[in-house]
Amino acid sequence: MDSQTRDFYSPTHVVFGWGASARTGAEARRLGGRRVFVVTDQRVHSAGLTREPLKSLGDAGIEAVIFDDCEVDPSTATVERALERYLAEGCDVIVCIGGGSPICLARAVALRASNPTLSLRAMEGMNKFAAPPKPTVLVTTTTGSGSEVSPVFIITDPERMVKMNVGGHGAQATVSILDPAMLKSLPAGQVIATGMDAITHSLEAFLSNRASLITDALAIRSLEVLWKHIGPAAYSVNNMESRGQMLLASIVSVQASGSARLGLVHATSDQICAFHHVSHGMSNALMLPVVMEYNLPAAPDKFVELARATGEDVRHEADAPEAFLKAIARFYRRMGIPTRLPDVVDPASFDDWADRTLDNPLYTTTIRQPGKAEIVELYRRAKAGWSWP
Image (cartoon, rainbow, N blue to C red; front, side, top):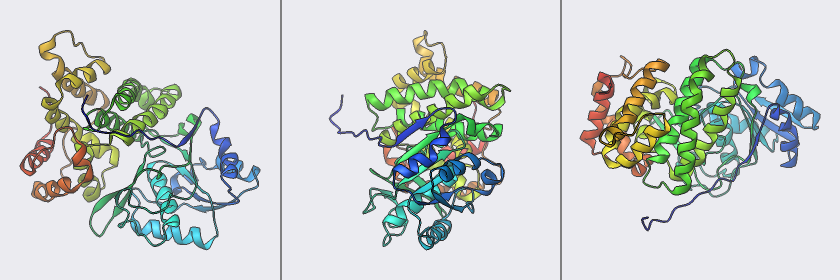
């Protein structure tokens, strides 16, 4: 064991179970809610997924002010617009009903409301805020984002074309409610995209230079569950059990990555998402194979554990580390996940993207840190299309 000091911190109160969204009002009331600010998006609201949580708030005698103007990958401008409404309406607790984008927006509003003199740019990074966020209750409608328990949320800065990571100790949500019944209408494509985000959290936590025995245990177990259930959750008619398992496993994966941190997959994929509006989860999926192959020489023993966790035969020691790369190749074929960057991606942008990767704080926690030329080559390999062997 090395001498590096590590932290494990997971303060969010998690409520899990069928029908758990009926607890929304009670939890908001317990946090002092009288007039709550409900963040959602128009798709979730129009689909009726807000009905049960809003009823719960009403039954608890709580007024609800609804803000449903949240886009995919919310911007700094949307945060400021939502904050202005929150303050003008005299709201207290912030309730979110939605997936990763509304959750990030709700958490950003909560942090800005308690730090009125600090912009999100000023708080970009870890532990740059002065006061903890306003109380938040999150009711998730998707699997995989893990923002329900993460110390970090993501907001897009369109002026710099940067996806800002903002957070730190104490920036987590106060309460997260995980109700598998809220996932019934989730499309297969979204299950895959968010599931790949969760799988990336497990893998990068396990391959972080800040990993520990605690985070490794969480990362490996969450990977096993996610790898097993993502297919049935996306494509099986009777998929609610698998979706519930993915919901829990995605939380566990972020409890691992929230302390061990993420790495090169996220640091390289942010550019795909920011410049070409590919979803966060699929951007990760596009870079994951080439980065995993690049990481293998730095942690062959850990790659044996990853192969074992994904059901590979690792009895032949000479081939054991590479077995996980074979597992990735088969998994991508089975799930129909692309291994080539979209045609719209111009290789001329790779030099700039490499600079942005080097500036990303997640670059510092990856287990193997490439130079600029190596990052450009990773992008080129992803553009050409990855395969193994």
